[in-house]
Amino acid sequence: MSAAAFLHFALTYAQLCLIVAFALASWRMLKGPRAQDRVLAMDTLYVDAMLLFLVIGMDNGNVFFFEAAAVIAILGFVATVTLAKFLMRGEVIE
Image (cartoon, rainbow, N blue to C red; front, side, top):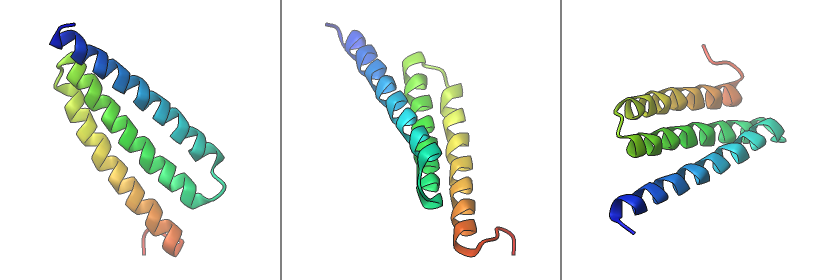
């Protein structure tokens, strides 16, 4: 097995694992008993999506996926901070 074939196999396996993690986090977000569980699931979802874009970008060699992963990371961070503030105080804008 050549190094290129092994790398392609490893990236494909990583994509499958991230898709499973994405599905489980989606289930937790829909089924979570509390709002805090849903916020943590959303946090996990954006991290999984960012990592999936990075792995796809490594597999394809396309720079667009790396830029999209950076945008997902920034928007996910802002959304997590906003929802955490809303859960703590009951309002986002004071």
